[in-house]
Length: 281
Length: 201
Image (cartoon, rainbow over all chains, first blue to last red; front, side):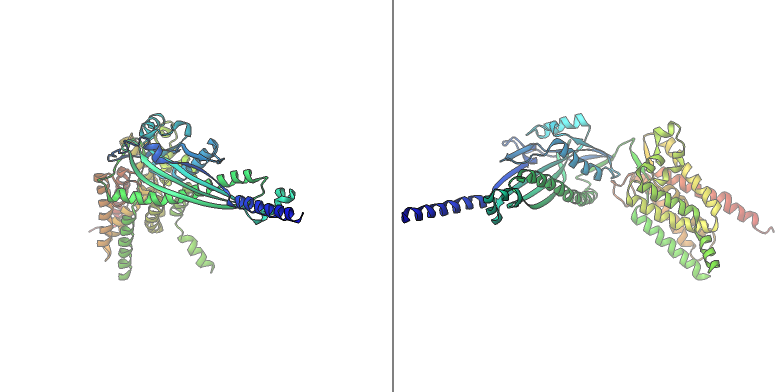
């Protein structure tokens, strides 16, 4: 009788190790979209020759999420409202630039999967935008059980012990295109990493929350990078007038101002004149 | 101590400070800016105050900063000597710029910026100081030449002299109007009074 018991115990031990290892290995879900797959869906004809963009100031721009291309496992999908909320943060940040006339938030329903520049031309006609910011993303969520998960055996542990570790890695990227010329003006990425834990009972809820928080954090990072890239782009436009043509639209917002160099020259010359005048006194 | 305080209070240029404070407030409060900005359709609809208040509105932090810097530097100097004249000059420069814009640029729907008044202040200060014949006169003439050169360059190039084309659509007519107001005031008020005060014979 001793032998079968030891065999049974050994079998149980082996089963536990196998099950434990399987549990600790975890699972991964992925949710992504790609600007390349959206704009260049035809694998045989990927060469689209951009022409010189004529940027008509102030610019009418659009912002849109590129349609999903990959959704593996039970990945959490952003709702249209959440996408519009994220896009609103971008529009609020960039609408205050004097050279931006308006920024339209374009719902994903207007973007056909693999729509390419033909789809962008339709959007341009429908929304009256010349420049579009295409947002793509890649979010990977990895879930695994840590050593605390042994408490799940007690059943109660499944409700109170946070043995489910999860990592949410999000990368968002905005590519700003001038639609008529097919030219990529500039792009900026944003990343976020969220580490969390949950009980098995509220794991799905936690993953949904982490997923949305990941998008929001990556979006904030991306907005900061977009500001920097926009400044670089402005310098590039000044430095390479042969590559970008800027024209002013009649009926636009106008202003008058002292550019920094003229202002400083006037102030320094005036200051020197005052100093010289007082010196005589 | 009390006398010192009184002197300090007396030296605060109220017009320059008020215009500067209102410009900053308009920049920080978009609804106020929307109420004050030059909007062609609204002016045509009877909102005439915008002709006077539009210089208080700016479209970016840089736009406000450099306009205010030049305006404050010149404004304080003029206002210390001619407080009443300076208030009238600001009003005249603002109105002249807006009316020029309304008549000459029918395509311009929205406008803002202190630059017209700042140009007026710089031109007035430069010609008045240059006219005094002090050792610094040639430098005041240089300030005048620099300001006129800036206006000509803007008119010819259609962009700010050194800033990039993205800053805003430049409107040189407002600067020219400000400069003409300053020259007109100098000739009509300052020069005329000097001639009248000149001892006869």
